[in-house]
Length: 214
Ligand code: AMP
Image (tube, rainbow, N blue to C red; front, side):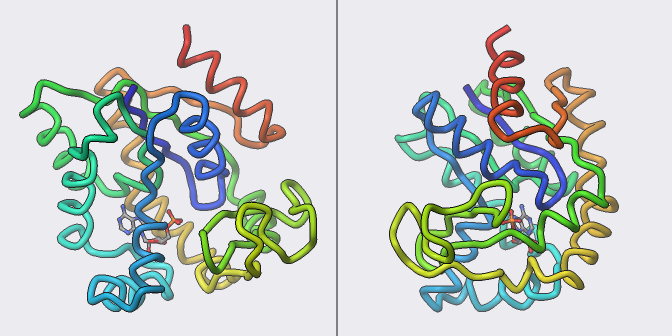
């Protein structure tokens, strides 16, 4: 199963993507995580990506598309994958469709996790990310067992620079301008499914699974 997660930053698509990847035993591919791990490791790609990410802007398509197209051709993707945070622009979506169609493949579902902007801003200020493994939590909606410490790896949690209120506002503007058009793009391909992302995260997950298994 090849699935794309759509939705505004902070809609909870990363959390749902991880849960789906676990359930279907397929890789969770997050471009945000790939960039953050490059930043942490001080790579050239990381240095370039950071300039954009810290301002709430998108990393240019030239630095993003090939990375993902290569990644989905890995052996571990042969039974499918969950793309989280890619595509984020129409050119990225078109490049993915083209690369897949060259191998007679296609996306099975693009899942739009719908959350209004007001709720996003409140959510993001409570979001915390692990400095080491990138796992994300929320101080109210998805807390860790020990406050400030990652459940998965025991490292420290932080408020990411790109989750700070001024950057969140910028990211929402960028989302509406550049990423929201993907909803119509995937509707046109007949694979769009929408879920109410304001519900409890386990209910959102059940809703997604019910649609995917219909
Ligand atoms: P995320 O963790 O998915 O919210 O991504 C964090 C940041 O990484 C975004 O705000 C962008 O700056 C950058 N990013 C992630 N995925 C992409 C993408 N597909 N295209 C461009 N920039 C991206």
